[in-house]
Image 1 (tube, helix red, strand yellow):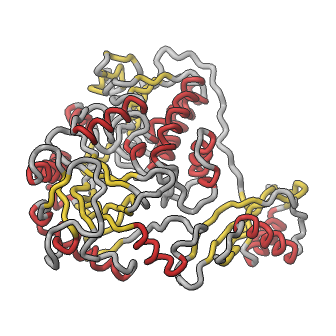
Image 2 (cartoon, helix red, strand yellow; image 1 turned 90 degrees about the vertical axis):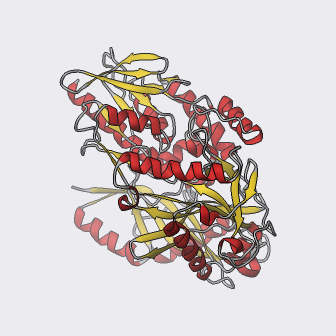
Image 3 (cartoon, rainbow, N blue to C red; image 1 turned 90 degrees about the horizontal axis):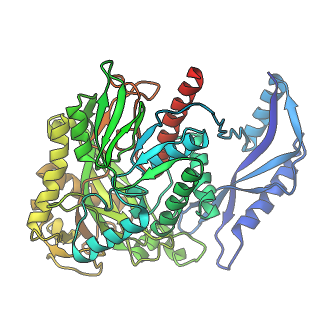
Length: 550
């Protein structure tokens, strides 16, 4: 079969960091044009089509920092090649750091099918949002049930919790429009390699995110902009016929004798349906227990626990960029660290440059921390979770054991800091038994009250020891990382779901026909983009099934 060439990408365009103010993007496009002309490609490029495709920073040598670009461009005329000529051209391109781009767009075919029973989506985080968007654009008029509130009302409840300590267990940092990611850095970077990632970024851009998320190697939105974006996505879903019901919690599933779904039980009444997308997020412990009672196929999975560590952002910048740290062209410094110790792992998670450590509990009597950055990332401190892997052998291998392992740490933190919602903190020097327990250069940014405690008394000995070993090892990656005045706030327990709701290859449950477990809460994603992609995959599977039936 003949193949069509439309767009190509020139990779590895390096532009050195300059002391003077420079338009690096424009410079990169100019260098790319010059390189393509020198290659004398068989097929003429469109001179007006050159644009930035990807952009990153190479700071491995602090005295020689580069911006590294991939530049995309179109051929001026449509080129159709036989397989043999296409292979020859591909080989030539690879030799000269050029990639052929297959721009496969996600196209929606709108179905006009009778819908006595509209599909229901439980949860309106990234996964649930993108399921609803795909179904709505395909003509299926989904009903979304979300236990929390709309993002504006939810933000007021979160602020009240942070300032006054008054927690709403249904609408908080974990539950509500946009999911837990709404009160985070809004990172869209992901390790999964899926073409749908580009679609997710395009949707965020179309609904209010800056254009640079489309090409930055480490795209982020920021919690301030994310709150606007999720509201705009909801409006699009509603414009296509979808319905979003807030303050509506999933409480049960009613099934027919053959195991198929008959209706869903919610806190606002039953909804008759034959399809339920389970996009509940990683903190819906009561829903996990309901699934156990319903005898669905749910099992425990590994997760991680740890602390939030804070450094001065300027110290992180200098460790990463050296003398060029204050160059305004450079992004705020961020890192990703990991170290294995036999079967165990210690790693940084959800690093928030210029960010804040936030109170994130969803249950009374517990302390949970998370990190958050605004789009400008202009805060004094950098923070990140430092997490230790927890395996089945640590909690007994069952669902209740996994949940209780997390919960016990959260409750112990609550009690040790005064049982009034205060979070326990400790400087790293004291945690390592090297210095006194006091607040020094790094002031805690936690959004609630804090109290100096010994975090060695909070975690199992294994976790404490691995945290220490991991943090000390990261000194090799970032000079000053293990400094005495780094501030620890505990605990970080919601890095991922402690359970997995089993599903078949078509994304549907094997024991409950019409149930689609998806996203982070069901154990199939980790982060905004991967959760959104998993939701899209589940939605497309449903659409394909309905198309076959109709």
